[in-house]
Image 1: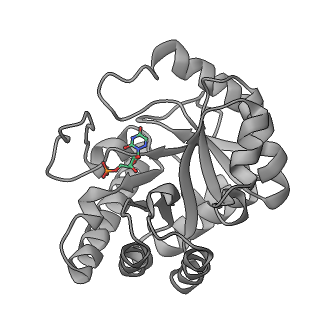
Image 2: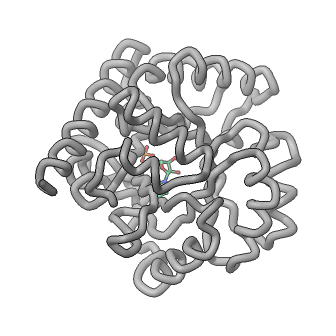
Length: 263
Ligand code: UP6
């Protein structure tokens, strides 16, 4: 299915968040997700407003914002309407079902109330999915499992990755795909693949991050490319906006190339 168009893959999804994402990707001709890993409210809003027109998805790490408040969430929601994008809180849940229910729905951030997607490690076993689904499914949210990671020395590989795919199969209404570095699942299955560790002109950082180009990851099966420092790391709002547009074009060209190669 990943060799089909984003539009035609809509038929493979009942989950409202997954459907909204596929529709947004097709409408904006953008498979770019910008990861806004900045630590003040003003900077988050500045980056999101700059990149909003170029993205299908904004990824947050809401717990790094020093002056977080409810108004940030209101303004994020307004920007998501203004620029037409969805929101993915990269929470990487990793606890027992009962605890993640509380972490997802309560606390300062109340993630389930505003984030269309979140993600979880599979290490605790299927109870983590059941817990998150009990909160997220009634709200129309979608979950991504971390099947692989971009970082050097990751333990998420081989049998772990395979077992993660199997866990996803058993919760298809809520688990819509994976954080991964390549296409996963059988050819007759359709999972969304969101790939971080993407940058043009850098091989990695000093803390184990490893980068590939948009063309390389889309060629291996990424449906959405996740770019952080490659975009928000530019100085000035205009430069950030231009960089988002560059990655949007690269990501879309790589998708068109993948479609063409499949014909
Ligand atoms: N991320 C990865 N690799 C993974 C999973 N998640 O880098 O396997 C997240 C990081 C960061 C973003 O938490 O928010 O994607 C990548 O940022 P960068 O482009 O600045 O390296």
